[in-house]
Every structure is written in C-alpha cells, then in structure tokens.
Amino acid sequence: MKDRTKLSERQKAILKFIEQYLERHGFPPTIRNIGEATGIESTSVVNYNLNKLVAAGYLAREAQAARGIRLVKEKNGKRGSTHAVSANGIAVQVMMLGPIAAGQPLPLPAEMSSDPADALEVLPAMLKGADPTEVFALRVRGDSMIDAMIGDGDIVLIRRAETARDGEMVAVYLEDRSEVTLKYFYKEGERIRLQPAHPTMQPIYADAKNVRVQGRVLSVLRLSV
Amino acid sequence: MKDRTKLSERQKAILKFIEQYLERHGFPPTIRNIGEATGIESTSVVNYNLNKLVAAGYLAREAQAARGIRLVKEKNGKRGSTHAVSANGIAVQVMMLGPIAAGQPLPLPAEMSSDPADALEVLPAMLKGADPTEVFALRVRGDSMIDAMIGDGDIVLIRRAETARDGEMVAVYLEDRSEVTLKYFYKEGERIRLQPAHPTMQPIYADAKNVRVQGRVLSVLRLSV
DNA sequence: ATTGTAGACGAACAGGAGTTCTACGTCAAC
DNA sequence: GTTGACGTAGAACTCCTGTTCGTCTACAAT
Image (cartoon, each protein chain N blue to C red):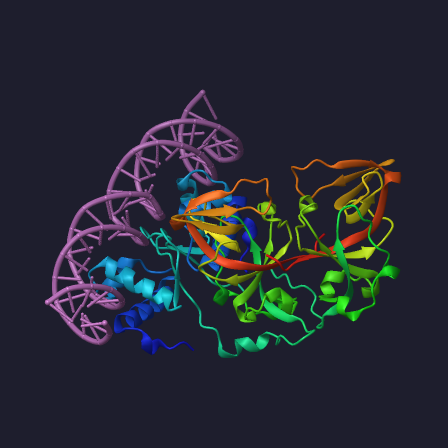
C-alpha cells in the first residue's frame, strides 16, 4: 500500500470514491460524478486532483475518453463493508403471543400458551443474547405503531423487562390512555419522554408513574411486505 | 456455465471484445468502439445486440451513461452449495451486500462477494419461497426510506427482478433523481405511482421510463432497535 | 512590496457517446 | 400473399463529459 497520507483530503476522498464506484458499477465515474460525491463544484478542480493522483501513481487516465480512469492496482484484496451477523447455525424458538392491540396490556409470560403451535422460529441474532425463554414475539395489528416504524403484520421480539435505559425501544403501557405502544424510551427526571421513530413525529411526555414498561424490543421482523 | 452457443456470431464477437477491452483499459468500450472492432457500421446495431446480451444475462447496462456497460460475472458452478438448504428449522444463508445509499444503483448479484463473511443467515420464511441464490440482503443506511417504514440499520431482503406487480414493495432506481428508494409499486398507464408506506406521505409519480425496478422486497429485519 | 506556486472556482466549449427513428431484407408462420 | 419477428443500416438528435481558460485566494520565497 502506498503512502496515502501524502495526499490531500480531497484526493483521498476522490480515490476512495473511485474505488467504491468501480466496485458498485463496474466502470469508472465521470469527473462530475466525482465532484458531486466529494462536494467539489468545479469539474476543473476534480480534473486537477485527478492529474495529481495520476502523478502520484494511484490512477491512470486515458485522455478524451469518457470515464477514462483506471485504478493502478497494487492493493491487497481488502474488502470493505462486511456485515455478517453472527452465524452459529440453527434457528431458535420463542413463544408467539397473540396479536397486540391497542388498549390491552401485554399478557404475562406465565399466561402464555405453552402450545408449541404458537412457537415462532427466529434467528439467534434476533435475540441479542437474551435467554430465549424470556423472549416472546408479538404480531402487531393495525397501524398504531407506524411511528415506531412498525406496521401491520410486523413481528416484534420483546424481552420482558420492567425497566429500560435511555434510547432503548420499549413496549410501554400507558395507564391513563390504557394502551400499549412501542417507543424509544428517555427518562427525563420524573417524567418520561417516549420518542417515536419517525423524526417528524412529536414525542409523548408522561409521568413516570403513568408509564409501565413491559419489555424491551429486541428486533423487528416484517414478512408481509 | 451459460450457453454461449445460443448467441449470434456478432454477439459473441461483441462479448469477447468487451472482455478484452475491459482487460486492457480498465473501463468499458463505447458503442462506437465496439462497432469498429466488430465491423459494425451502425451504432444502433451495436446497441441492439448489446440489449440482446443484457437480456441473455451476459451484460448489464446503465442508461444514459457513457461506457455504461459491465460484465455480469459468471457464477462459479458450486455457488449454490454455499447456501444452506431450506430445511425446516434451519437458517438459510443469503448474500449480504454493502450498505445501500441514495444515489447509487444496487450492485448486481453476480458481483457479490463470495466471501462467506458477507453471508447472512435468515429464516426460510423470510425468503417467501424464493431461491436463496436469487435473494440478497441489504443494510440500509440513513433515514431516507423511513417512509417505507425502513430505518437506519435495517436489513432488507430483496429478490432481484426487473418488473413488479401492483402493490408490491420494490427497490426502484429513479433515473432523474439518481437514487434508489423502496416504495409500493403501482402502474397507472404510462406513469408509475410509488407509494410510501406511511399513509400520510404523498406518493411519487414518475414516468415509466424513469423508473428502473431493481428488485422486490421480501422481508425486513431490524436488529438494531 | 513583488513574485511564484499550489490550489480552487465557474463558465464555456467541443468532441464523445447513447438513443431514437425510419427503412430495408430475410425467413418462417398463417 | 401477407404478416410479423428478427437482424441490419444509416442518420439525426440530444446530452454526456473531458478540456480549456480566465480569475481568485493563500502562502512562501525573493
């Protein structure tokens, strides 16, 4: 690997973008592509920096040719962006509770059916390390939680809990409204802010006594697209 | 290995020339380059045959882009074996592509890394019966698709497709905005209505030519709650 | 203060390059 | 004989895209 530290920030950004673009498209970007991606308004500035990169030995260019850029190879095959989620094999079973509807608190785990027909297979990664026996799945009915980015038919994995930390998505039962909802949880002194996932939606502020945390949302699964 | 014998002589020559040119230059040839090399006078004839090659699965093209040709790499034969069989209870593996960002079309499945680290285990139910080799997973970056109820960090399972039926959620590339978005698809004569999942959001109306369907959304997985 | 150099900007230009349209010939199907 | 699909041509059209040029700033060296 050559010493990229000698390059200006812009040149590094350009080089990175070209590599990325090439990976994604299979052909090089145009000067204007590069400019847009790196915040450079002027094509001549891009051109200038491209020539710098050529001089520095990172690129080769073909004059007068559209997208006539080529990377000078000598990279070791380092791949970026690997997002493997843990892979230890087999699906896990959790209890599947009936549909969750507004106006009802969640049933207690003890009330859950032990009927294996109500079991749902999920990926280990969806449990976030929680004990499968403490996790249950809910199928959401209606669009009442759309502001939590959860729609009709979505399956929500919840780990039962009475408390929550700031920023966690929780299933809470609001006494006064007598409804269950899914929101991001933030404790602000004696009151609690329940923040919808949709940024334009207004949060709900509720007295801490009014809020009964029922569980913490581990993951969401949407099969019904 | 695909059967190249079904291609016409011209198409074989074109394909060979593109491979060769790509090797030599590092970027694809122009239509006129191809014409000169293969003795075709008319650009439209080259264009015609290129489209044939796309239809046959050998190439991919990007509209309106100079040298917007890329080779669809052959899958090395045993590729299917990297995918676990969809037995009951067992997780299935699909390819994991890098983050999806606005302004970029989706990469081709054939270009996907065969690095097992880029594999993601999913539930058989998440494939909706689709062949695992035709399905890939994308991790969504940013909140640009929040109106599709898909947020930052969500994993979307997509089955590659060029067409869609009404009501399906699709990944579409909008030419004029040059961005990829996930919306519900409705064809209304010559224009297409792209409906956000959020009921209060306004749909996008786009000319059919402007809309490139990239795939059909099978399911959504949110681990990062 | 003057000069020189590197870097940046924006506009305009000109050739590069994809697309579209019409037309022609072949060949098999009806 | 007519039709339609397929492959081929050629040219016009549009706009994509690299290049050039004049100008401006910041910073050292003279």
